[in-house]
Image 1 (cartoon, rainbow, N blue to C red):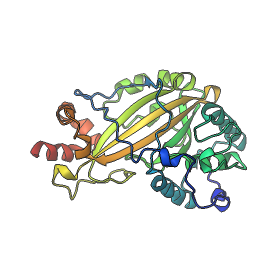
Image 2 (image 1 turned 90 degrees about the horizontal axis):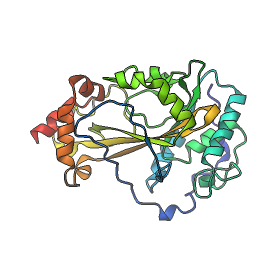
Image 3 (image 1 turned 90 degrees about the vertical axis):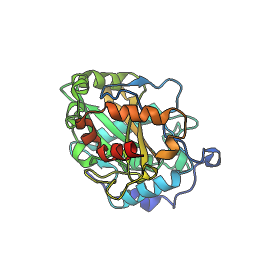
Length: 299
């Protein structure tokens, strides 16, 4: 179900959030690269870290999201999500995220949109979309014990199509991941933990030949790249927030920065090269970075 973009008819041109001037200019990308690469269910407790990571590049992200909403492409709802379901999810997200300094105030208004009060649950999720640099997915529990992707607001996917994940379980979502055996074995346990515990954080990283915020499936961003200085580091910071009987909120913050900036920190280049050397051909193919490794080895 995709509703008409009524929010943009009521929301004035984007103003800056209160306190925007104190936000950092551009947050550096995390560097979760391990010397020996493994595909594994590596949820870690978030601890005292913030749920969201906003910076003063926010207007560029939000402008892209506004464009997608105007085209009816964001958020995307699962076909079996009823109006009552949406309302229940709205209340669960408000309860999980409302606070004095975040994107949702105690009255359920969108604080970073001037306290905007949505008129429907659908409009609430549109407004949340326009509040965050993060993408988000609401995972709802299925009868099989697996969480399923029921509501997606994903403007910046990393090599996948959000509409193809609608309704899929944790197990199904990871079917195409290379060397996914550990992920698949733990799919149900992950669902249970995401729904009732946390928040948790995990990271996914890759290399790209482009600084674009989103990456289309099958694109070859390295086709015109021949030097290491042209490469980009791309990292997703993924946060799970428990919604208990309603499921889990999955936040995805994408970081994209020139690789030479990422590797300016001592020790990082050696760690990256060891990680790339440890990857199987299947992992390199899944990530689409075999060409990037060749370029780095030749540099």
